[in-house]
Length: 368
Image 1: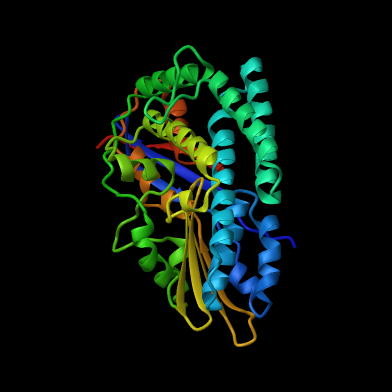
Image 2: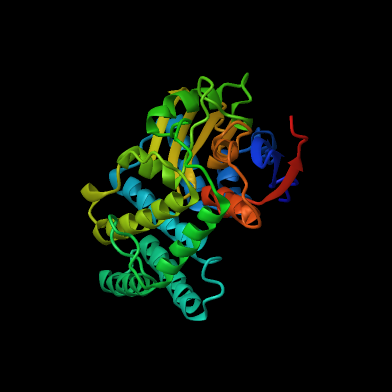
């Protein structure tokens, strides 16, 4: 199946008197999956997901499976639920590693070699988690991962960066770029998306009269979702510059590593908000999954024969890159200082999601 849709975002900055006075975001177009799979068995959609979503593919599969079970009035057994949470956590861990480190270590041959070894070990651990391999093999792989991360400079949750390591160099470069760019510290006025919003989100998502997923908002609010939002909701961070966002990602990597070490027992599974499902009435269900890029929602409605009547999904990108959302808010009002401005702007945009494709244009406006 080939889907033609625009998976790219255009960001245009309006600048006057060396200050960003406006941000225009032209969102990506989303694949019309509800229309394409209408009238087909739900399993057809489930089988197509890995081809449709290359990023957070496991999270999408878990979200759809959980939504389908809710629509059918079923509930996953505790062991199945635990395995799904484990798969989501492992995918989040792997995608955070790639997103945070790959581009930043590209010029450091030694560190890049360590990262490649690390990603191979993480992939091996993901396979062993799904196949139920011997505990001894898992323990050896986990030990390799911990050693590789220590060599790169990952510390504890409280102090995620060890001095004199590749990660410390990355943090120093981020601080210099932010200082050269002259950015204000953005207050978190937009708030964060959390499990407490799920009921409202899924009710709007399944409503056939609302085009909610195209440009979501909650009573005029466009909250942020993702790593920084998760950290801010627990630790009450108020500033959200690119340096703080990078630190939040490294702290989450340290947290996830601790969970992976202790995550074998069902009663020690990650918090219940990682995977949540909601029955919305006969043949209707929804689910939310906390993936690497933020909170992902799926909603589905089935007909009497179990075929897809309606399907909608809402990815983190639609919140963060909303025309009035967190990315626009983080850039508006920033004062430009010189040659490092574009690099600082790109660092800020990428700090929300390094894997989102976008183009950046600057429009100079006449001074008032």
